[in-house]
Length: 291
Image 1 (cartoon, helix red, strand yellow):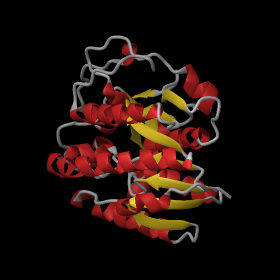
Image 2 (cartoon, one colour):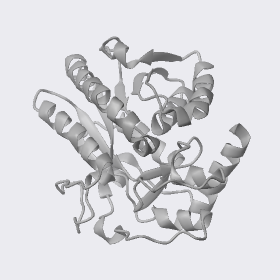
Image 3 (cartoon, one colour):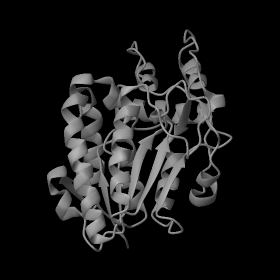
Image 4 (tube, helix red, strand yellow):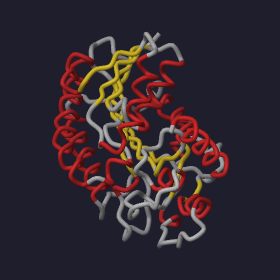
């Protein structure tokens, strides 16, 4: 039985990580923080499900220094999800809290020799960047990308001080428990979606992504990797948008800019297994059941 910390247990990816770890019999300390009011119903359901497991301990970000000990196997940092970027005022309130929390986590991971697995975004790359690989220097042109790049730069400052960290840059995510503010969820709940603020290049099904993150805790060949979760079968975001909204007009996509990641396959066994039709069907079924 392992001992894991998830910062952002009440966020899309963080919740799924907690669930998967608990299903494997691991002990999880999950840090939660305020969400936007539009996500209240989703948050309540997440909390109820996690709270039923005796191996889960709910904490807050104020407890982060107590959560990470020499017995902690790995820390997952998944503070934000795609829904947060639809609410400017809320995001501004949380940015400083997130940065301070990450800095505290980094320092404690160095002190306890604990691996940090940081969730970043492919949106750290701007639309003018014509070729994107893991070693490409990010040049973000959107608020989400700039925020995640700032976090990555904080991590880089501490690598020479002994921090062992894997940065995983992910595409947009969908599936059960997707934030209710996001485009697919808005359409599935028969609402008129707001202006699109999420990444619209690629989309990955949440349950395909989680196993790769779990594999991160086992990867010991190099504790300072940057990995893009992209394989040759990954789906295009606009294809799902068109399945859900026949009136959706394709915007300028940049699929040709990204190079598929060999490291995602060799180090994390990442593979796109779920088709868009299957994934959207599962998300629709989940939303009908819970909401």
